[in-house]
Length: 203
Image (cartoon, rainbow, N blue to C red; front, side):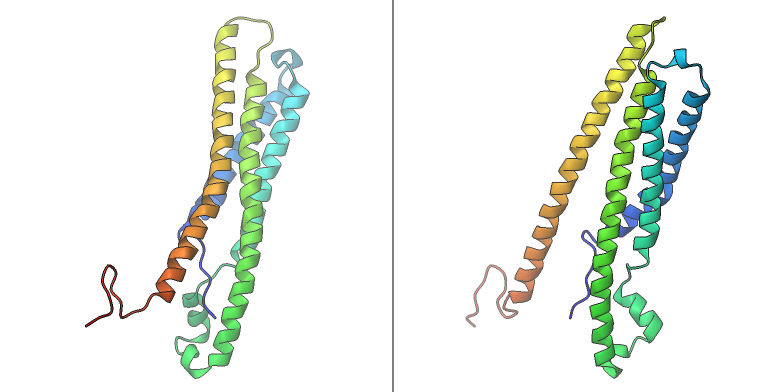
């Protein structure tokens, strides 16, 4: 039984950067803006109640992303981790135990993938709602410089739509990437080692 790696191999580290650095900062931003809206006079915002609701949901989604990441991370480990805990010679000295540990690694990897996907979905939804909350906070009441505030709202809405398109693109692209990697590895395993690429097996 083979060891199951993440796809791409650097995905776990990339997810760690997002969940442990970006998510806390965005949570702080959402909660800070929530405090500003809650403390301000209702006349300063067109829809203060809706804005607060969206911002609170966004902050909770970021917190959920961090919690899910923490829970998922304990199920992600490599062959090197197994050998560190059980000894580098376990594959030769105790092959049955080694196969059982690899099987467990496969089950644990499935758990990591499920909870990590939940963390990813929570983070992506949080970013979209945070941007929406900021846009709601910027929508002006009657006052000065209305055109500038509406321009800021339009720009933010455009960036939010682009972010949504990017999220959908990455979702489908990750599936295509995983399929290409699996296909390439399958060809490598099934290739005749005596046949050189572009040549033949006659000597």
